Length: 539
Image 1 (tube, rainbow, N blue to C red):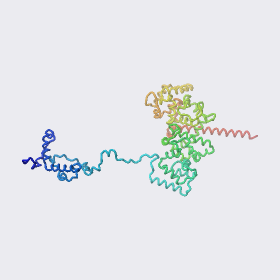
Image 2 (image 1 turned 45 degrees about the horizontal axis):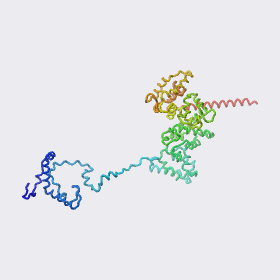
Image 3 (image 1 turned 180 degrees about the vertical axis):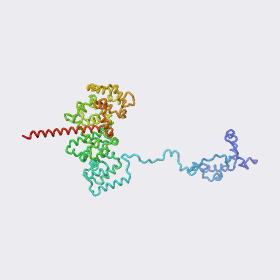
Image 4 (image 1 turned 120 degrees about the vertical axis):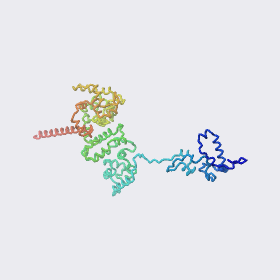
């Protein structure tokens, strides 16, 4: 390096500063080398111009920015920084993606457009989530709505004054797709002013603007039946549709001459609906319970089937006949109430006194009867359905509560022994070979297969297909003996028609028996009339 006498830098060859190899370890171990190199770099002419330019910008108040983003037209933008190291020692850049590297993105973006990182955190970008829950169902597409309006317009064509109730019946089934015996209830929902007619605008306002078109069938039926101020259905809400069913169904025309039996039939159907559907037992049928059950399918079936007895769920007249006749046989004084002594005669004295006492203590179900110590017709409907179909969940819950003496939710051997003791005594009185409880307990445990030893839970009972027989063993002697004998005829009957429930088979057998008894009485009465006429004829 050539220096004049005054010590000023006169000439410096930058190539002399290009070191072939300087390792980071050498720089760390010898700080003097790094200081010497920095001093030499400051002596370069380009470095002097850079420092002067930066000082001038500072005096002029120009804000300092990154070197690669600076807009100042100084020597830095013209000539690159003088390097002390060869280009070969610079690490390679990372591969650039198709979207551009962060470095190039930074060059294209101005600092003002980036904003503060804290501001970005405070105000995140809001993602618009489309509505996925609709209280009354997802709104139908416009195509479906337009097609529905077109059908409505065709039906109201020529009826400028509106449709009357008789004309609205077919409209209910064909346009609204709900059972025809809902026409009166729907008509009254729309005709709030009681004009006797429904106009096209009134129907559109209720069915489309009221969002009925978006609802599924159970929700539509629930909305039509329930009162506006309630969020559940009560038994009285079903009476209007059953009155219309009785007046219009061809399979129930023969009842029109006996209004009292029409009323009893309607009551029986409603009681059966609430027995199977209202699982909480509070007399308030919710929309969720309505959707979980099979009532809607039964309503659609009864609207298409002319033979009402083929609709086994809820609406069969034969089933009503069996229930009502059984109640009438036990109600000897015909005050429409049954007491303990009446119920003990049920099924040819098949039930034990202890289980009857539990029923009248209202443990399995609180009576709707207001008379102390007596059950009314509704209470009897629940009892007979539970007794004759122990395969259904309502029945299993009914009898489980009866056996659970302390109400702790489990059945212990002592509780089962309490009810079986009376069975054992009755077998001895009937000269039947008694079966010890120890043997019975092993059999009960094998039939249920409980998860825990020592007790049986309601869950265990519901998970076993033989739970009904367990209850029969404990308190129904006739069915216990029938189970032990294994009637091959009944077994073959169950295999031939597995879709029929225990209640369906019982009702079918009892209806045949009751009808034969009635026919026999009619024949005996008729023969008596003929005999009396023959005796009185000569005189």
